[in-house]
Length: 431
Image (cartoon, rainbow, N blue to C red):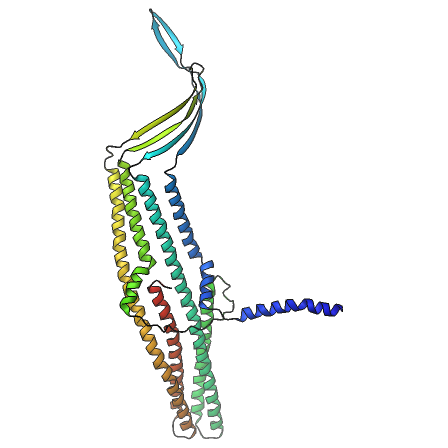
C-alpha cells in the first residue's frame, strides 16, 4: 500500500522532468530568440533609460507652468541696533528702527502669466525630443534583432557546413577502404593509397576547423541572449522569403517607415522649438507672486504682512546673447536636416543592395541545387571508372572535391538567402 502511494507521488515529478527535458530538447525559433534578446540586451536597456530620461525632461518642461513655492528663513545679528537721528527744535534725537538681533522668514508663491512663448516652446521641444528618443529605441531594437538574426544564421550555416565536412570525411573514408583493398590485391599503386590518405587527413582537419567555428558561432549567439557561452544550442531551420515586391515600392516604404529618419525629423523639430524658446527670453516676462513675510522687530507695528505682486521684467538689450544662442540652435537644426537627407540616400542604397542580394541568392539556390545532383552522379561515374581501371585516382578525388564544393555552395546559398530576406526587412523598417 505504501509502495503504491510512493509510486503515485513520483508520477507527477516524472512527468514534470519529462516535460522539462522535452522543452530543453525543442529547437528554438528566431522569434523566440528575438523575444529573449529584447529582454536581456544591455544596449537596449540603456536606450530605454534614455527614453525615460526624455520623458522626465518633458515633465520638467510642463512643470514650468505651475506655481513656484519658496520658503526663506534667516537670523541676523548686527553689531549695533539700527537707529534714526532726528533734529527737533535744535536738539538731536535718536529713534531705534529695528532690533540688534532678529529673525525673519517668508513664504512666496510665483506663477508665470506670460513668458513670450518660452515655456510653451520648451514643452514642444521636450515633446519632440521624447518622440525622437522613442523612435531611436525602436531603431535600436531592430538593429538588435538583425544582430541576433546574423548570429542565428551563422549557427545554421556552421551546422550545415559541419554536415558537409562530415559527409566529405565519410566519403573519403569509404574510398580509402576501397583503394586499400585494391592495393592489397596489387591492382593499384601505393601512391593512390597515400594520396587518398593525405586527402582524408586534410578533410579531417577541415572538419575540426568547421566544428570550432560552430562552437564560436553558438557562443556568439548565446552572448546576445544573455546565456552562458557554452550552453547547448538547437535552432529551427529558416526558409528564404518567397514574396517578391518591386524595388520602387520597397524604397518608398523604407523612407516612410524607417524610424531613424523619423527620429531625425523629430530632433529637427525639437531644435526649432528650442530656438523659439530661447528667443522668447527677449519678450516681457510677466509673473504674479504672493505670500506672507515676517520680520522680527518690536519697533515695528506689523511684523508680519501678506503681499501680492504683479511683476514685469523686460530685457531690452543683452549684447546679442539670446540672439546668438538661438542662431546656434537653428544651425544645429540645419545640420540635422543635412544628416537626414544623407541618411535617406543611404537607406535607398541599402534597400537596393539587399533587394539585389535577395534576387541573387534565389538564383544561387536553383543553380546549387541542380549542381549537387550532377556532382553526385559525376562522383559515382568516376568511382566506377576507377574501380574498372578506366580512370586515374586523381579524377575520383577531383569529383569528390566538386561534390563537397557543390554541397557547401548550396549550404551557403540557403543561409545567404535567409539572411538577405531579413536584411531587406531591416532596410525597409519592417523587421
